[in-house]
Length: 489
Image (tube, rainbow, N blue to C red; front, side, top):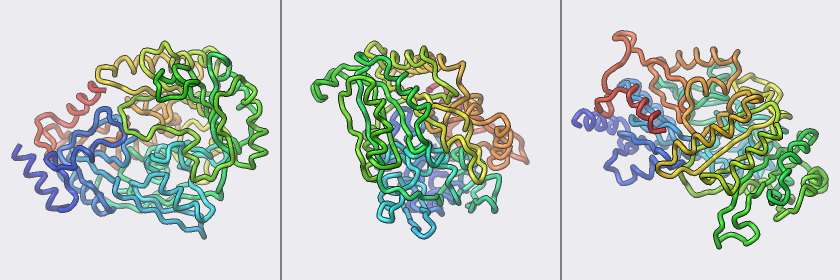
């Protein structure tokens, strides 16, 4: 314990106003994040307010061979750290340059802040379905957003990144200055360092035709197939998804929804209300519509389209990207979210293609641009339900094995093993990505939230690092801690 206290004292001396240890009153709230399942259990937290705080924290971790992780909103976290946690949620600055149609976004800013800042200039970012998600972490994993079929992945529209690599260096990364890092950060950035800010393109969007149609699955059991056929020839200006869940039978809900399996058809169309209404007319004819919220809305209200829960909670989720959808697999997807499901489950499909299928101006590591759909499954997890939820998810996604291309990192809400992580990228890109990871983080100190491959932690002078990591003073090594994390998952 004396080693641990001594190391925390050294860290506090480096960052006197930013370090929270377990005795600090704000420690638990800082480590929790949006995802409450298996929270971080760090020996200390650096509550960063500027890029220099991040750089100093990573430099300290590198000097002391201490594993570290970073958390902004904590939506996608699956692997907790017991070393050093760098919290960037206070770094929320956003600057808009209307002349260049760009935004500078700090590490902890959510999409809602970027949307609100861009709107007065008639501009919008390529944000996701939930405004409360961190803009940087979302973009680093690719970014399949509300305007995706028209403009592509959010990662395709990054111009510059400021990143602290695991050696403690703060680097300005562009296509010219650091071509390898620029390529790898845009699509797998959460595995290569701590991005403290990014410059992104904005698009000239002020309004969209968007909303949802709620359909009773019991009265329209073929709605998923109707939606699939509809997606085959919709214009690129239309991005859509379908979500299936069974509402609980509770008095807080409208009587027409209680206890019913419902399909939510979500649509975003870039165009007039008249154009959008004509595009979605086949969906309105698929069966009895319980609720229709489709209308022209300002982009500042785009979060209402998916209307996702804002309350932090414990959950796990998984996904596959596929080349096509088969009727039997669609039926299984609906059943998994039906009234007979062993745990509450939400299944979904997002329509890809369009601009997502085209290579960006500056190549990046985002994989599977030829995928036509992304299939996802998510469940809240209570104590003792981890194995049950994992088996349910595995069984459902196994029915797509014949058409699966791999995974999408944005929707992987559990720890990924090395082969699962590999499946998110093309066979040609992965060796280059791994080589960059090994060069940037040779000691394997950075612990990304989704897991993935681990680089052997090697000290050039002394060989592999085996003992306790110096910040915690705990007896288990970093590798042993990782094994414990995997058993907990």
